[in-house]
Structures are given as C-alpha cells and as structure tokens.
Image (cartoon, rainbow, N blue to C red; front, side, top):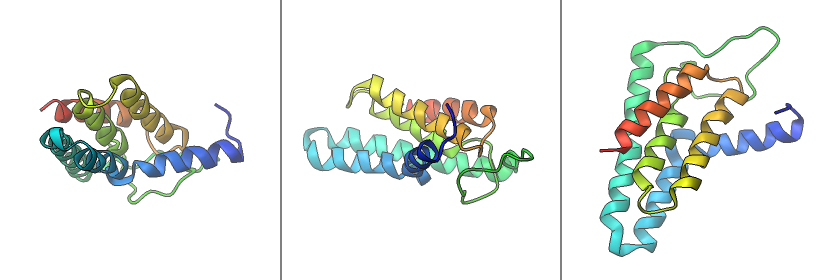
Length: 144
C-alpha cells in the first residue's frame, strides 16, 4: 500500500483505536450493556483483552527490544514507549477476536485484528516478528 497523506491519516486513526486495547474494551462494554443474557461471556472476553494487554506490556519491558529504526523511514505515528516486542496492538486485538468469536461473527473480528497488526507495520513501529508474537500471545490468552 502506498504511503500517501490520506492513507497515513486513516491508518493512524485505525491504529489509534487499538491503543491500550481500548476499542476492544469498548466492544466488551457494549456487549455487557446491550446483551445482558450473555453478560458473563462479554465480561470474560473483556478480561481476556486486559490480561493479554498486561502480558504483552510485561514481556515488552522484560525483553526491551527497541522499535525499528530505518534511516530515511521515520515512524509515521508516535508511540507510548520505544519498546516493540511483542506488539500490544496485535496481542489485544487477537485476544479479542478469539474471546469474542462466539459472540460476534468471527470473520470480521479476525479481519479487524489482522488489519490492526498490519497497521503497525505500515506505520513503521513494529517488526513483523513483533506482530507474529502478538498474534500468538493474544490467541493463547483469548482462548482461556
């Protein structure tokens, strides 16, 4: 995908939704409010997102891998830290897709999670291995 001002703007906006797993907590909260019969399932899914996010940020601090630094290719988005492994966006997104897959259509959930991971590569703030580790970690935590 070409980097134009318009695509950068939209990818940044999409990526910002995943900051700290907030969009996925929003999905869980909306489910708890709008679907009281399955409130425990929505709560469990939101808890999975929280646990995945906490796990990824803890691992990130332990590993200490710095974000990509490519000469003449600056990051296209600011990040809360300079640490990259694993991607917390990918981790929380795939935890949400896995945890909410019985509550919402799985295809769109996984597409949104995949797009979140790709957005981080597009913006130059992660290595592919950061995303793959986040996918694995999020899927594992979301399966609990």
